[in-house]
Amino acid sequence: MKNKKKSVVSLSSLPKRAFTDERTQIRLNWNKRALLDRIQFALSLCCERPVVLHVEFVDSLQIATLNWQFRGKDMPTDVLSFPPHVEHQYPHKGFEPENIGELAVCVEVCIKQAKTHKVTLSQEIEKMIFHGLIHLKGFDHERSDAAHAVMSSLERSVRSQVTRQLGFPDFCLPLTETEVKKKSASARGKK
Image 1 (spheres, rainbow, N blue to C red):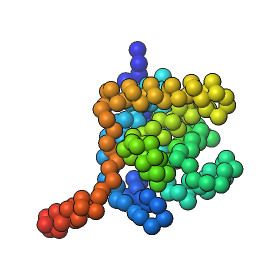
Image 2: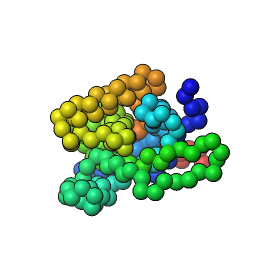
Image 3: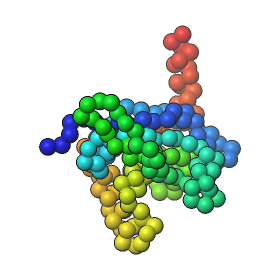
């Protein structure tokens, strides 16, 4: 019988703006509850018992710094996975979730990749979160072609099952200038 308790997922502040290039910035509209539900469902598929996971949203400079510091690569990347260094102890009797680590996700890189891959921003962010999660479960696509094939298959399976259960991801929507103006006008009208 599967444990009924949910995994604990924490998110950093969700960025309200992101750069699409050096000069262009967009506003982002997040549905935090939908994002948390999708991550928790993915964790239920990948983990035998409840776990603790933190997702940190960072900008291009922050991810480039982390990528250099931990991987020796001098460039921004989409997601980095950090296994835990210290196991957290929880005083709740019968519920001591394993801390599986932390993910750093760069929304700005995801914006560029979403455009390249012709998918929505929510799809790309979700893909990167699930990719990082599978890394935290011990898989590494850089080991060999066979490892790459296994990890890719796992990612597709998790994404497919989450979409089948929860529908198409739409937790992060870029706002067009028209939508921003409508929201601003609506907010002014409510005062």
